[in-house]
Length: 428
Image 1 (tube, rainbow, N blue to C red):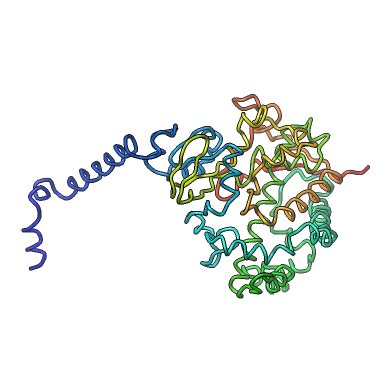
Image 2 (image 1 turned 180 degrees about the vertical axis):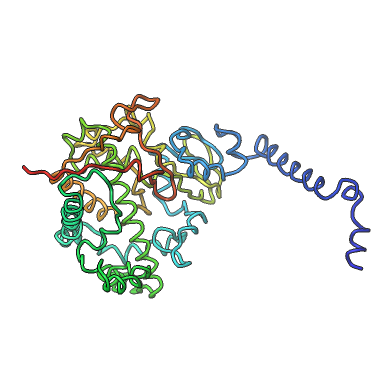
């Protein structure tokens, strides 16, 4: 009886058009209203940029996921994509520009951690808790440990696995990288010990190192004297492991890739400038990172952006901004030699109050590994590596980079095809 009465009392217009037509007309009216608002009412209507950007900030997310940050690096739009160094420092420099719900997608175990938190107070608390373990003084004390478990460990694996399995020092063909995990203890790869290792491999929590976990458990905020709960420790460990391993590994991968495309720089490569240039030309965290404008609004590049507007930080766009960098798409590590201003204009680790707290650890790790790689091994691309190389140029006349996709970090589309390398151990 309820449904019969409902259908009888439907508006005549719906009865005449049908639900599908009625909903289609309603959708058109909604879009039309948004268009009229964007053209004549919106406080952002005077900001130049693509019209679609005024209708929805989702466009910025699409640009980030498609890796089109350079193409749109000089536009201003509703999601106000900040690419000038002054804009970025203004946004990064204050807690007034809070992180948006975009970062909810990178929460660990369903809770906020130091990177994803939208709460400035929690961010400051975590920094005070972890500060003693990530400052340069503490890292200087543990540098020998980092060297032993970084470059020395890598060299041990390469010398043992790459050399022995290929019958020499050169690696002409790949082999499954799963063997590397057993390099330090080859016995674990044999039956029945391999059966004992399977539950450990499946346990994601087993990845957490005891030393890091212990430091996090002991981490205390000197102001409030508070410590983290067990679940918060787990979330921060996962954050550190994922952020530290993925970002550092991908930065090193892109650095080596760029050096192989530019043999003139490889022959005189120096660890820090090579990595700094890689982080500028192809930042692994070069997507679009949103902040929300403070209630009182903000003026960027002469345009007023009202409070609540999402402002997307275009790191790649800033790194490719021709107003800041001469010949920005050219790989030239020498521009970072004795140039502190150039280093300040690289935002791979963020800046201001939410800068990456582990940046000193990441730099120390990457520099030590890259320096030892360049010292102890000769690197080259395979003979059949024809899709990329110093003579395969893009539309700008620069060596063409391998294709990549952007999801939090930039990763190669086809690493099996594009990330092949010939290693020759130096004998001198």
